[in-house]
Amino acid sequence: MATHGADSEVGQLQTVMLHRPGPELKRLTPRNNDKLLFDGIPWVSRAQEEHDAFAEALSTRGVEVLYLTDLLTETLQSEVARNHAITTALAGLHLGDTLRAYLATALRDHSAEELTEYLTAGIRNDEVRGGHGLVTSLLAHDDFLIDPLPNLLFTRDSSVWVRDRVAVTSLAMPARARETQLTELIYTEHPRFRGTRKIHGWHHEHVEGGDVLLLAPGVIAVGVGERTTPAGVERLARQVFHAQLAHTVLAVPIAQERATMHLDTVCTMVDVDKIVMYPAVADSLQAYAVTVPEATETEDSLHLDVSPAEPFLVAAAKAMGIDTLHQIDTGLDPVTAEREQWDDGNNTLALAPRVAVAYERNDETNDRLEEAGIEVVRIAGSELGSGRGGPRCMSCPISREPLPTDG
Ligand SMILES: NC(=O)NCCC[C@H](N)C(=O)O
Image (cartoon, rainbow, N blue to C red; front, side):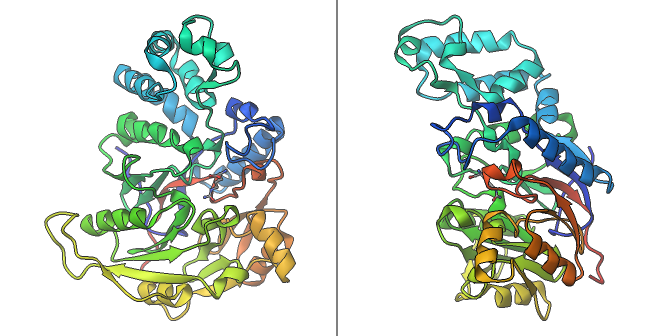
């Protein structure tokens, strides 16, 4: 088994999981895009070109790029995995027994590649040739029997590695809930990940990967807002403390709105002690530092110490054991900052300390990053951005080099 894991946001990136946008994006229409969490209807072939350039920017810098659909197809070679995938995809109560049984039989006859496409792009009622019974007759022709997953593009959210464990997350929005059935299956059944120890899971309280920032080895910031719930951060904290993956969890309340859906929409780490941050929230962002005074036998019996709220940058620096966590501001003036925050200017992906991938469109923020000594790897994202996510959202680091001890 290859060794995987990450203990920071900025250690040299070695392996990352991406999802190349595919047929699931062609399911978006002006009638369903809001429900499916896209702000527009992307031009799919251009989105694919932009994504290929993103992947190439990573691989030319020595990063191993794994694609979620390749991993899924390889996983689905196993009979056990296929049966599990089909059963969970058909578990929805909207199907009824007749249609569920028909689809289960039909899907079993397909190749692993075809099954991957059905699991990601979904199946519409009018695409089913047999199984005609009460439910298919009553559903509209364009109702989905298996929902498409256009937000798979944002691999950050459905799993997150904390040291050598992977947390399969629990996604809050119904349009994304099924994504973690796929990541859980990959991490459980794919030969590359066999034996990997998991934490959390889709059956637990809501936690999304975009809210989880590994500020430094042992220090995890978790945004609490539209997606990750207060109970979600408590559950994650119990698990990381019990498994000795962290000594401090910072619970960071963020506004419950679309512009700030995850903590990584307002700040991301670009160096061991530098963070790019939306200035409109920087002064008001608070953190509750959670620690445990002593280990106990079980996760549930851990007593969590919660410090009074402090300014985020202060609490973070304290927990990280550094004097200052330096802030680099999004934009220049408040209007530019608001525009560039919306366009994911804060959502950078660090490839190493002081090297970060960012959308090229956010000129002012990128200039500021460069002034602060960060090498900015600019990528196009006009179509990719229509789902409201940047380079960090579109990547799940599977391995990063541990940070050198001298920082
Ligand atoms: N970490 C992130 O901020 N991910 C972006 C997710 C965008 C997606 N359309 C969503 O609403 O969940």
